[in-house]
Length: 243
Image 1: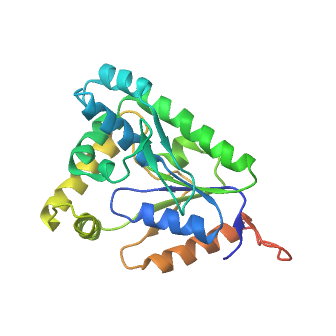
Image 2: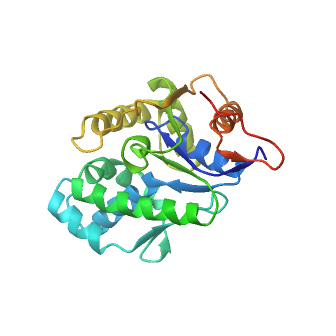
């Protein structure tokens, strides 16, 4: 272990950059909490589908979101995503939810509702004395704009599509590289053009291209960044602060 994280690492980026894997492994590496904000939007999207509501009907989506009983875990070792008390972590990664989540997450009232919950969870972890790695698409720009370390992961569209296809296949979901590329392109377009909290790198984010890097290489690089920002508590070792 490199040391215990004492603050917030905001990890943003588009689909297929390895955010979830990187965030969980980094949180474990730094003995920190972990929050997958995308899972929260997927939980609401699943609730909308189960209610037979139209994902593009903002008023109806917000009504479902307010009534939904959902929760996510903040342990990188045992993350969960529950809807009405049932873990639906596998179901929220399916094709139907993946299609619905962009319009659902574009509803301003839904984003306001979930951002408030995300900040509550982050505060709870920080109050416990631990740091936290938070992943999503607007963490450094909206959710925790004062995070001491903001990372924006990126990779070529072709690499991201290949990773998404492999991930879907490994999970038993039908996928081809072409269909994954279409899904990645669609999600990029919707997320980057939405009116509220569009996907973009924060002005002070460190951009990390993962196209040619292994997961372990990314973890080492991000751990070093956290150390240079003075975010690691290592007994007997003074962290070097970045200028």
